[in-house]
Amino acid sequence: MCGRLNTTFDSGVKKLYTSLKIHQVIDKPIDSRFVKAADTVSIVRNVGEQRQVENAIWWLLLDQTENGFKPSRYTSFNTRYDKLNTKGSAGYQAYRSARCIIAVKGFGETEFVNKKPVHYFDMEAASGGLILGGLCREWKHQTTGKIKLSCSVITLPPHEKLKHIHSKAMPLLLPQESSVIDQWLNPQINEVEQFESLLHPFIPQTLIAHRIDKPMSHQVISKPMSIHRD
Image 1: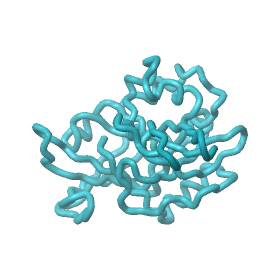
Image 2: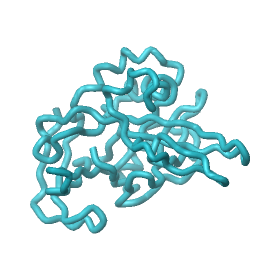
Image 3: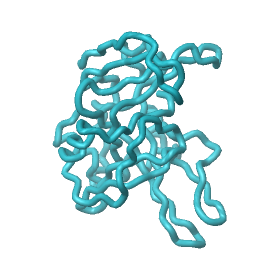
């Protein structure tokens, strides 16, 4: 999965937030058609028994600066599914104690051949929004004492229905069932074997795919394609 999200806070995404039973909105949800890696994105997580919305840097590993934090030189806006159970990896501990979700309108993919982009696609939910499974971390500044949140999106192997769009990976799209979301966000659940079934390519909702000219301008240059749910 490439590093861009559509976090437009439209009526469909607002309804999705409502369904998530959020009790506290610490930060106003980011409302943007184009969010790229290392930008700020809104996440939903459980802190104790309270579910809340907070803004985080979309880059899991951060380096401390004099007055704050910056993204690490190690790429970490995505966390591969096959690294989640590798001790010492960036996402190992977060997968067990700091799972989060990112509610979005859609996401973007860029296909590369020989390190050159050959096409760009934007995908969005045919209705409502999408829930991406992610990880988060808290960083406390040693001088100022301020806390900064960071996050990543978990990526899976490519889905057969999406290989013509992106041949290497897809984001973890979580089913919008309260039981799944409740368990995913429960920080007390550290026996992660129950999440194994989620770490396989799956499309829980019908997607609409548009080929675009470039990510920044995102002008549609082809007829929309429907990618039906599994």
